[in-house]
Image 1 (cartoon, rainbow, N blue to C red):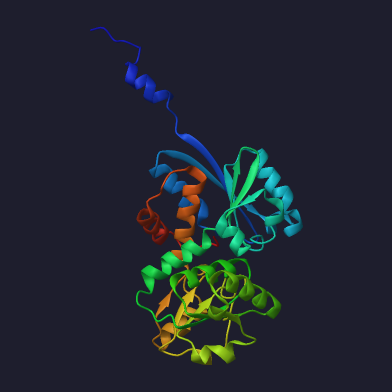
Image 2 (image 1 turned 90 degrees about the vertical axis):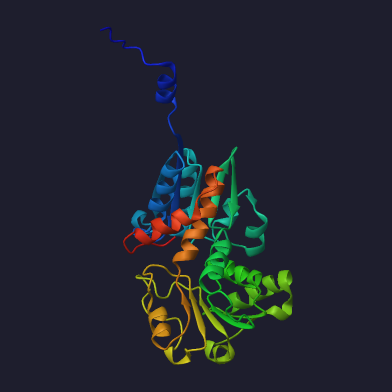
Length: 303
């Protein structure tokens, strides 16, 4: 019997057709437990892509936002297709970008940066992530009056998403009232001044609200606690969380204990990642598969 050492033509073709390499990363502080690498790499494998997703932890590097320009340059020089950015970089990154998408420009916040043809292009997928997760997890929730605590980088995207969902009156509360007022003015210019305002204290607006959104880091492992007085919670007040490390925050536990409807931050994390994956790779991901993969992971992560 003759044995040939020359592979058939189709086998040879398959052997040389290596998966497309896609290098990605996440820049932020205290991001060690992030689920982003696992989510992007798993979906990459399912799509026939060799995705490598690296954490660029500013805390581990010993730098603050002043180190952001150097980290962007490092990732770009290493051939990354792009990076996600998270706390505290979502607004600080803008001066270092060449272009902004329409949503990122409207929000003044970026969580996804593409490196394309020598340019850095900023996008925001957080607002979509929040609105899609809310639609799925809080169907038919009343949207007449909603209070959002937190008006920073994530907060601006979440507020934008909430108004797109149809919130009639959104009250913004932040430890920096000037920041809440600035965001209210910005979003009022887009959606109408009557639909969004700043409030000095949660106590002034939560008692009349249908729902509450936490868009602060309070509740994260690094920032334990609750963003408001627990006594303000009511059974008829729905509660939406942005934090997903831990997935079950103190706020959600307290709200559930008195019978409130709740939605955790996991859905936002998955849907913002799915849209970022599409932007990075040009391939539409399977969001349901990404949700299942996220649910199967051990508790972790930022963005």
